Length: 270
Image (cartoon, rainbow, N blue to C red; front, top):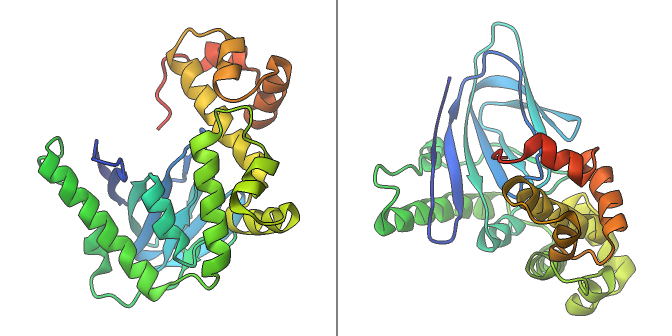
C-alpha cells in the first residue's frame, strides 16, 4: 500500500512523500540518486538494509538515506510495519541535515520527543503546481528538519562545516576538469589527509569517489535523455579522457556507457 506526490518546488527541496505499508520485501535501487530520504517508522518493526548493512528499527525510529545509497526493507511475519517518508534534495537541505547527527555510518536516530512527529511528514498540498503551495511545502520540510536539528544535533559542527564546504564546492564544480581532490582541499583550506578522513567518515565516500559519483550520475542523465556522443558526455561531466571516463563508469555501474545507453535510454530513474 503506497501513496505519493511529486513536487516542482521553488528550490526543489521536496521530491516526493508518502506512506508505505509493505507486504513484501522491496528495494529502492541506487540508480545514482542524488536525493536524501528521511523515513519515520510509525507502526511495528522491521529491518532497513542500507548499502548491505542491516539496521533493525521500531516505531519512533527515524532513518536517513544519503545520496548514492541503496536501501531495501525486510519485514517480520505477522508483524505490522508502517513508515512515512519524504525525499529531499538541494544544498539547503544538505546543510540542515549536516546539523543533525545523521551520517552514512549512523543512519538511524532514536525516537524524537515531539508529539505526533509523523504529521510533519505530510508536506503534500492539493495545489502543488502553484507558487504559494511550493512555499508551504518548503516551509513544512524546514520545520520537519528543525526538530531533528533540535533533538538529534550534530556533535561535530566544526568538522561538519568542512564537509559541507567541500560538498558544496564539488556539487557546483564537478563538471570542471579542474575539480580535483587538491582543489577541494585548497578551497576548504585543510590538509588533504584530514579532509579524506572527515569526508569518508561523514559521507561514506572518499573525496574522489564523491566527485566521480556526481560526474557519473550526471552522465547517466545525459545518456538516458540525449543523443550526445560518449566523448562529449565525458567532457561535459569533467573527464578529459574518454577511456578513463568509461573505466570509472564501468566500475560504478557495472556496464559501459554505451551499454548503459542501450539499456536505459529514455527511462526515468527516480
